Amino acid sequence: MFGGFGGTEFLVIILIAIFLWGPDKLPKALANLRRFISKARNMASNAAADLSREIGTDIRPEDLNPKTFVRKHILTEEDQEMLTSPLKSTMRDLQDGTKPLKEGLTDTTRDIESTRRSVNRGSLTRKANGTNGANGSGDAAAVEPAAGTRDRAATFDDVT
Image 1 (cartoon, one colour):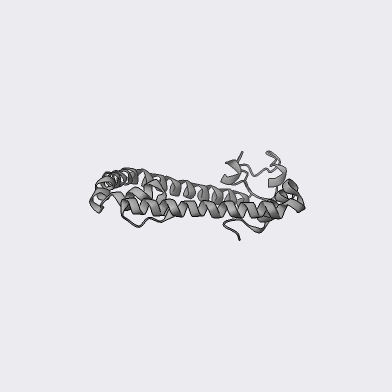
Image 2 (cartoon, rainbow, N blue to C red):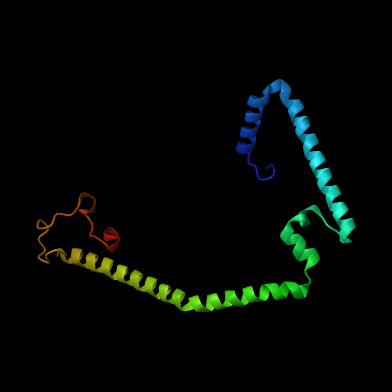
């Protein structure tokens, strides 16, 4: 709504302001805040204009971030490429080195998922055949299931 503030945050700020300054002093406090913000913006614009005049390039207030300023006004294209190329090659090496690990993890996950499905199918098959997985006798009274699992077969998810 207002610069990243939602309705609730804005309402909380207004209520806090009313409690801090009271309803009679709040308009004057808001006017002072508006003047302060206006002066701060004016000072930033003047500083940017002075810096632009000194350096000889067009500088906007958002360019005053040190990283942006250096990248935009001091470094040439070749300098930027020289600084970033080792990082890019290191990143490529890391990606190439971790590719087998990623593939191995994917294969392992696929195998675990396949095993889980087969265990679940096996427990459903045992229940349909009337056998109990604990003793294989089919005697349901031999091993009493937990209260929540009386009417269904235990699955791999129940164990994990």
